Length: 124
View 1 (spheres, helix red, strand yellow):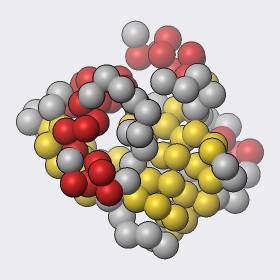
View 2: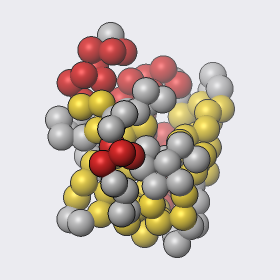
View 3: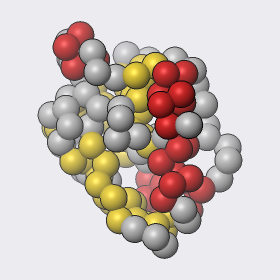
């Protein structure tokens, strides 16, 4: 886990990388879902507002909607995850981002996001 990522109370994360942002779900969410078997991600160039559903993820236990932590435009989709959603179940977290976005989100949009350490305390 990258300690500099910011998390939502609904278990998404956002991580600034190279003037864009990686967006995904936290390791806690992955553990709660169980074996992930399907991921539906948006098209490139789709735009989403903060808290809008941008993806669906299904495990052997349940289906869940994934919400945007900040507003932005999709500039990349993790095709490896789309083609092999079970990769999310691996302990190696390196490439578990779901989408990359461009965002002009202001500080207000970041205000309710939690530092990873605070998020971990909240879910433990």
